[in-house]
Amino acid sequence: MENVRGITTFIRIVRSGNFSTAARGLGITPQAASMHVKQLEDWVGVRLFNRSTRQVSLTEEGTRFYQTCVAAVDAIDDEVERMRDSSKEVFGTVRVAAPVGIGIHFVAPAIGQLLEMHPRISIDLLIQNRIPDVVAEGIDVGVLPHPLPETTLIARRVATSPFVLCASPAYLQRNGTPQTVEELARHRRIALRSWITKTVRPWRFRCAGTIVTSPAEASLITNEADSLIEAMLAGAGIGLITKYRVVPYLRSGRLKTVLDGLVDGELSHSIYMQQRRKLPRKTRVVADFLYDVLSTHPDLRER
Image 1 (spheres, helix red, strand yellow):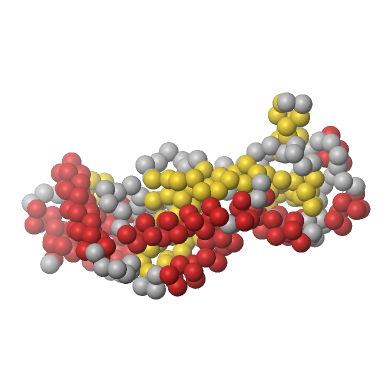
Image 2 (tube, rainbow, N blue to C red):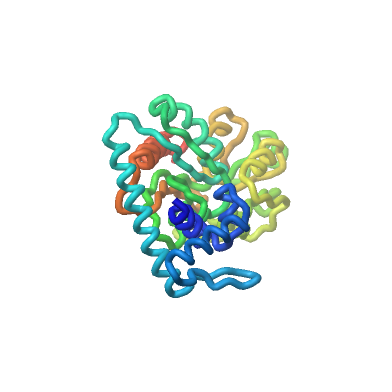
């Protein structure tokens, strides 16, 4: 039993990169984690980690042993999932990650329907604007902008939404509605800083068969789309945003698009999962459910 506990601690330390983080994830102290590894090293008869005051790294023997342990644990997990799959009910916790816009406005509202369909599933929903470390954070299913960064994840594109320029009717009444790209220069611009690239998203347009960039400086720059929407609703200026974020406001008339047909660019999202020999049934169920929700949602199909 001590050896099993030591192997679990050993794997968690390798995945998290240090003893303290692994200990917190296991609900034990760093001293206890160190003791578990020491007992494991005594059992296998070799040193598994090179330790320094700043970091830990695997020894050559530790690397081989880690690969063996992971393969064994995965085999156990696969067998457990196979036995669970033999039952009619799907159960267990599924950790789902999504960026703020998709997560708050589309994923979270759909979870209730999922839980009605599968009452023995529980969802651990992580909403954040960053690319997660899927393995270290134990994420089973997620949504990310497409294309994904260099990765071995399984991904399935689910929705694509074009960029649009929007402003409130009150702003356009006061300042006029631009009819050409050149007329944007005399309008206040609200710009969005991408959480992926950390740069301000450029305004590009299709003009006479070529792509041009409007160089005017922004009066307001924000790093969150909801704050951009609120600023547009308050009449602060014209903003560039993906259409799915503002479809309800366009339908209600609280926002209006400008320069329709000229704005270039779109944003796609994908459902992703870890690449494993056999995906747990609960993971497949949640991934398929999210795909159905996002691929058929009317606000994500508006083009």
